[in-house]
Length: 69
Image (cartoon, rainbow, N blue to C red; front, side, top):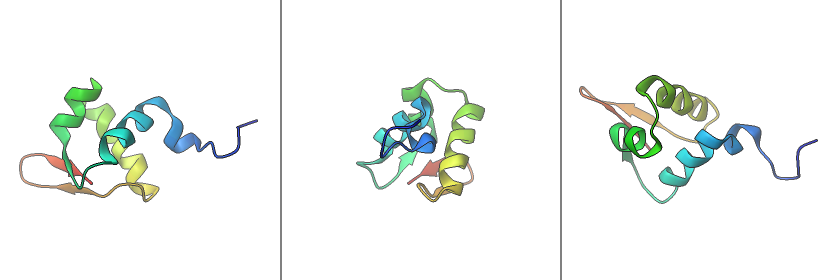
C-alpha cells in the first residue's frame, strides 16, 4: 500500500531528483541536468519523456541539445 499523496511517477528517485532541479527554474539545459544527476543521455531522456507524457514538464529540443521546463 502506498502512503497518501505518494505518486509513484514523481517519487521514483531519479524523477524526484529531476523535479527538484526543475521546480525553481523556468528552463534548464539537458547537459546541466545530466551532469548534476550523473545520468547517461539515454537515462535522462527516458525520465524526461515519462514526465512529459504525464504533463509535468515540457521538453523543447533545439539544434544542439534539449531543454526542459
